[in-house]
Amino acid sequence: MKTAVEELSPTRVKLTVEVPFDELRPSMDAAYKKVAQQVRVPGFRPGKVPARIIEQRFGRAVVLEETLNDAVPKLYGQAVDEADVFPVSQPDIEVTKIDDGEQIEFTAEVDIRPNFEVPDYQGIEVTVDSAEVSDEDVNAQLDALRQRFATLTGVERAAAKGDFVVMDLRAEIDGKNIEEQQANEVSYEVGAGSVLQGLDDALEGMSAGEEKRFKTELVGGENAGEEADVIINVKSVKEKVLPELDDEFAQLASEFDTLDELKNSIREQARRNKLIDQVVQAREKALDALLEKIDIPLPDSALKAEVDARKHNLDHQVAESGLSRDAFFRLYQTTEEERFEEFEKNSARAIKVGFVLDKIVKAEELGVSEQELTNFVVRRAMEMGVQPNELAKHLADNDQLTLAMVEIVRDKAKSVLGDAAKVVDTDGNEVDLKAIYTEINGEPVAEDDSAAEGDAGAEAKPAEDKAEA
Image (cartoon, rainbow, N blue to C red):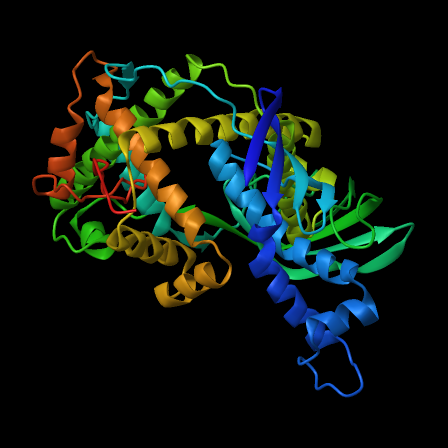
C-alpha cells in the first residue's frame, strides 16, 4: 500500500491511497463468504455456493462492492498511521480507481490536528490565591452550617424577604382557570428569585389569609409564554430562626463537644481546601499562560461538532426544566444569544486545550495504568451515584474506556504543567506544590500517584512521569 498526503489547509489533508489487489485477499474471501450466506442457488446449501457460481449468477461487482466496504475503512486507518496525521473528523472517502486483479485507489479528505510546537513550559510564572484562612472564612462556614440547622417559626406579621410562606396558586387567562397552572400548599422563600416574574414583589407585605392577583407571563405548560392572571393565597408566614453559636450547637451539628473544637476543625478543612485550590489554580493558570503563547488554527468540523454538542445539551436541559426557553434563560440570568457566544468561545478553547495536552502527553510519555483506570471509574461512579461495576460495564459496552483514558492522561499533563511552573500566591509567597501534595496526602508522594480531580474534596497529587499504556 502506498499513501500520498496533500495538505489542503493547515487543518485538512487529502490522502491518496494505492492498494495492490493482493492486499485485498482477506476482505475478498470474507466477501465471498458473506454473499454466499445471503444468496440462494438451487443445488447448493446456504453458505456453500462456490465463488465462480456467485460471479456467474450475480456478477463480480457484487463481490467487489462487499470487499471494498470491508477493506477501505481498515486501509484508511493504516494510511492515517503511515501519514502520521491525527484525524478529528469523519473522512470523506471516494474510491477513484478499480483495476480488477491489479489495484484499487481511493482518496480520503479529513480534518486533522494542525502541526504546532509546544513552547517550553518550565518556569512559567503563575499567581494563585493565598491559603491563609481568615476569621471571615471560618464564620462563613459556620453561617452555612447554621443555615442547615435553621428552624421555621410562624409569625403574625406581613411577609418580608427571607421569610417562608405556604401558599396556593392558580392562573387564569381571560377569566378561565388553567388547571395545569395551579398548586396548593407550596412552600417558598420570599425573594428567592422565582422564574414567575412578579411573584416576589407580590408576596412582600402579604399576611396569612390574604389573597392577591397580578399579571405575568406563564413559564411552563401548554400556555407557556402567554400572559395570565396569577392568584396567590398566603396560608402562613414563617421566619427562619438560626441556632445560637454555642457548645450545644457544636454537639448538634458535628461530632465535637465544644464550639472551639468545631471552629478548629473548620479552619483545618478550610486550609486543606485552599491548598487544593492552589494546586488546581496553578495547573489551570499554567495551561492558560501556555495557550497564550500558541496560535493554533482550529478545524471547522471539530469546532462545529463541539458547539453543536453543547447546544444539544442545552436543548435537553431546557426540555427537562419544563420551562419555556425565555423563562429558562431568565432563571439563569442570561440570554440564548449570550449562551451561544459562550459556547463558541469555550468550544474553541476546549479543542485547543485538547491539542496542547495531547502533545504534552506524547512528549512526557504519559500513560494510564490499570489501577489508575480503576480509581477513575470508582471516583466517577461515586459522583454519579452508581455502582463502579455498572459504570465500568457501561464504559466498556459503549467504547468509552478510551475516552476515560484520554481524560486521565490529559489531567496528568495538567499536573506536569503545574509542577513545572513557578508559583507564588497573592501575598508574594512562593508556593511549593510538592509540599502541598505531602501535606494533603499525609505522606510522601509516591511515584505512581495519579493526578488530582480538582474539586475541594479530592486529594492533590502530581502526575507520574511514566505509566503503562
